[in-house]
Length: 601
Image 1 (cartoon, rainbow, N blue to C red):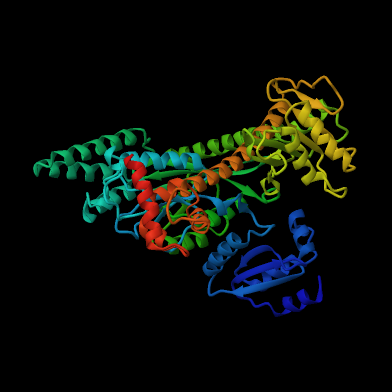
Image 2 (image 1 turned 90 degrees about the vertical axis):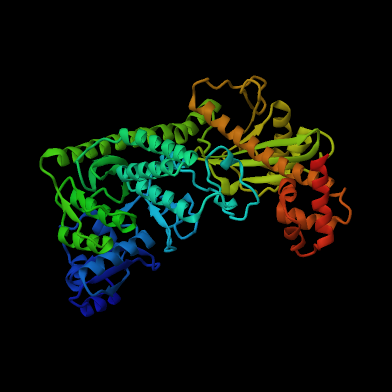
């Protein structure tokens, strides 16, 4: 313990607040709260054999700390949650990747709201639902929502006529004035009720609106409402009645050698409407009660809805404090309870069982992922007879159209995983205008490995047979890189050719090594052909604009830089083009009229 810490410990007050522990670099490594800062912080620096290994390791790294006084313990709890979410300290229990969890956003701050997925919650007047961990399920939910309710999905509200979405009855076309704002708002109210799990109220509202439309002889509108009502009823039939009434979150917990999983079952109006699970970091030495408490604080600090009752698998410390905080968050009384019997205990047990299954599934997924990455790297090294496993691999591919727009790609895999930040692409100069893959391969390897001090990978893969391999080795060995292994991958039979050997290595058809090298080759091909198409599209764009009177190289570049593709220029208005620096109204009209004439022809 240094002098700075000793001096600060003496001055600590007996007041509630938050303490922030920092290491030698000033990085925040732990955030905690206390009803008495002096008592709590001092405990860390006493010689206490009861400290866990984790706490001892943390204290050994503390070089400084800060405190923030608060008016109450509830305020300290709120501040602690926000600081943990912001800084993600190393020694705090935290939700894995919680900063990336998506939400469903209903833009109720717009006259005609949209529904879309976002990863950023802002105080903008919109409604947010989440967070969700299963992005695939979230996209499915959004597709279902758009089938049930014909919401607008476009950003612009100044369309001249309805788009295809309106004609296939997926949108009511508010952008073209086909529906009034009050009527559209009624649908949004039902969307919000649906997302909250209040499907019975949605059914009632739709039925009343359908009957009213029928009484007013608005049969087309009544039929549309009838179809919506039937679709909602079909979804509601699948929801299982759990507790009969009220809103609850039931939480189950499981832990194993791979970590801790928290499963939440969402019960709204007595019906099960969904579930989700979260994995926790930094949980090895913590008690079950501490883990559950940390999860509740972090999850409900960012949740968009807090039910009146939260069902827990065990008692937790600070229960009354947590209830007070949740009540302040939600503006109504929230109770935490541990049911001992009956339906509520059954749903908690069901959540625990699902948490155990989620952990088992995650363990199997990680095992499979490891086999496909690190395991595959070791296997590939074995089959190729390498002294060391090829931890870093670089693969090259050539792409062109009969020799024009020739490009090369280099993709990088480390430990069997793509490292996209190290990808490179090359515009080939030596073989431009004539198809010559051998010369192209010599150029790209010269540019990457031509210097004697070039940093070398553990394995170089050339997408091609013996000819391309020979061309690459000529450059690589000529630059003095004599030990790095280089192999060629023939496209037809997935044969791997080693330098100086006429017979290829045939990787077993079901081996992870083969799947890995195929993924690397396919990624190199994708990266190369994407760049080639980009250059080809630019060339085509240039050739088309050459036919427009008044558009020279300068204005052609302006249009190309701003719009990027010919299709976007075709859709641009005269005003958009004329507003660009270097363009004017006559030249914009010339481009616009040229493409309009092409449409007519």
